[in-house]
Length: 465
Image (cartoon, rainbow, N blue to C red; front, side, top):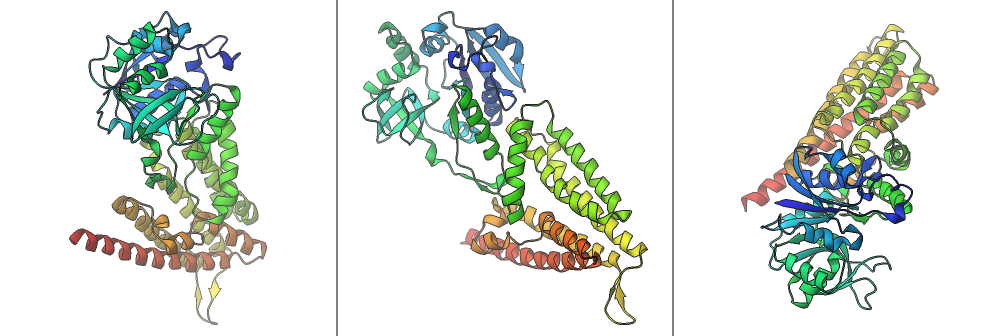
């Protein structure tokens, strides 16, 4: 399926941001609006798009080119762009002979909304994605009954949802657009209103989309946003950052890391710093911490591991906000595990060199290295159980049931291990930090192994019925 993007507008309300460029090239979190639309289309498998340009359109053509992230891009000039977006739609009428997606370049869309619309059957000339809420004066209201649009427009006395600006269209819709033009109308909604009068316009309610996202370990309500002002740019940034946040598994991640990460990413997204650069910086800092543990600077190392914990969440969140996710980025957790293991080994080696061990009797003691080896084994096992469960069941173990949602707050993770490490270093008993993590990681391993086997066996029994 192909897409048609209307990007001819000037964006007067965004002045002076639009003094030297069109509205479609105004950036939100470091990425131009029209590029965000293209990234979302690419993510759902759309490989060809036509962009209708008007005001300063040559700048859009220069920025995007004829290919964008593997998508074929074509351009259509609308010389009557000042008359309204209806004229941009009509300018493309000879380019589409099959069903197509229609989008506004200044609207942000969750790619799940687009993919859900693409999967819909089209039984009329147009299907509009709606959000079921009371709109403001600036919103285009919609009155729908039984899935059919009865009325659409600004200032409706009666409405029960709003127009999101995302449509699945058949070529027949151009006839309604042409008729609206002959009636001296100027908006796409005017064409939809005529289709509605002919009982030829339907809706898709975005509330029907499943909010749970396995990779995010939480429910993320499908979103969209029309960006028309400077305040809405800020609001859009906050929306993108919040929706890029994965579900926090422990109390430290929820109450400390998440708000700190969100604030940093909010400002970092406007810079030229890339997620990969953040990853490299975090790893350099992490191995500096390893060196500190090994050389006996335990207090400084124990403090810096908290900083690593916060910074480590930035790269993935930044990549999601700026649409810079890559296959290479999936290796991040493997590198995280490597430096986490190096901390335990370095701490254990330092304690071993200093002659410290856990005395069980006058003749029997346990070396710090023994604790570090078993900690790594336990952590490796339960992390593998956790990852395999999500791949197999399609849902995070943390969200599977009430027990898991409670246990995840205390389950073994780096954030929680950092606390006893700092506490026992301050108490002058660093060997006991390894002892604590040893028993805690063993408990987590037992619980995760038990719950994963239990739930997967239940799934097998369901499948066998």
